[in-house]
Length: 414
Ligand SMILES: Cc1ncc(COP(=O)(O)O)c(C=O)c1O
Image (cartoon, rainbow, N blue to C red; front, side, top):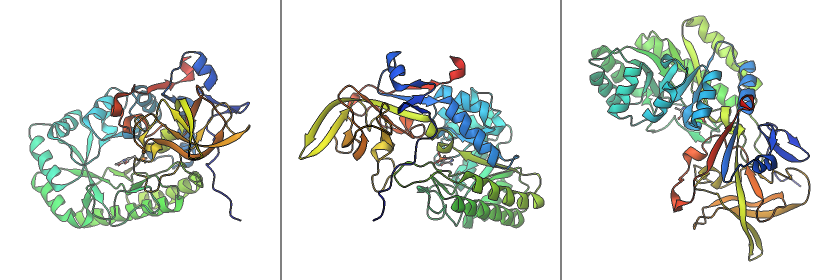
């Protein structure tokens, strides 16, 4: 008989006496000391550890950028600025956050379709790199930049391959992101006519991939494409941004990405590339891989009931705070995030229950028919893997319930 797939074990936080410990304290201690639910907790030590381990495996000279869209919490962003080499931003709001940190504007890049003139101008004035997403955008940049310092430009390419096995493919077919490889003739001609210098390429093939080989293949294909374009368009590049797509295990049966295999293969392809193009910086930009495992969403059980034989726990938080855990942020088949009773993580009596939020919609589910340590009204449950695309990616005003607090815990501040 085949085994029922389970969630990957929690290894990023200590579990002491079967209790989840976040930022050096059990959830009970946090609550006794005044933490109120619903809330997100982000643990700085977990982020620092993830980055340390990642850097150990990645080639030494690769530039590691943080994609603010994963979690734009101001303290977390300040913390990230101490630990990464640059930022990827996707709006003027993120630009403002990024400019308040110690990250050099030269190490910030701005990607994303539909950049408004105001945003492009702010980017040009700040001297950050713009990843150009269309010919139209390039033309607008040309006229906006007329009385300003020359803009720093990369072309974001929609390649003719995608990132296999990614949760979200962002290249390889008709997409609003980047410029089709087949249209690059026009783009480089237009840049030349406007005397705009393009000295970077950005290739973002997909997101949330747990298959190291698929990422290696996409990175290799990206660097091969870069070499082809350098040759065809006689480019003089200072930077290639290979995107990222490194995933974390969310659902039963998923396994963590093999980062040592990935790092070793990336070193080889980068060495081969550097032998031909020694003066080009190679950047990867990651969001969820850096912060996703460091966040926990806590919500309290308000009511319990059974309906037609199924048990329900109804909580004070749900989809309006955590759209991704409810399955409504891009999941095709809804699956459960790892949700645990933080007082009885692995041991003790288990029960099967559907955990919902307080919204009047059947979409408001935090876990369906999920096996978890027994709990009762007033107890708190923990949704793990919640540090990325949580609070900021959720419809927090839906039904006008209170917002979730977000608490960044850096034990060094204690
Ligand atoms: C251009 C770009 N960079 C970085 C990211 C971050 O992705 P992730 O959080 O999966 O690493 C995304 C996600 O959509 C993206 O579109």
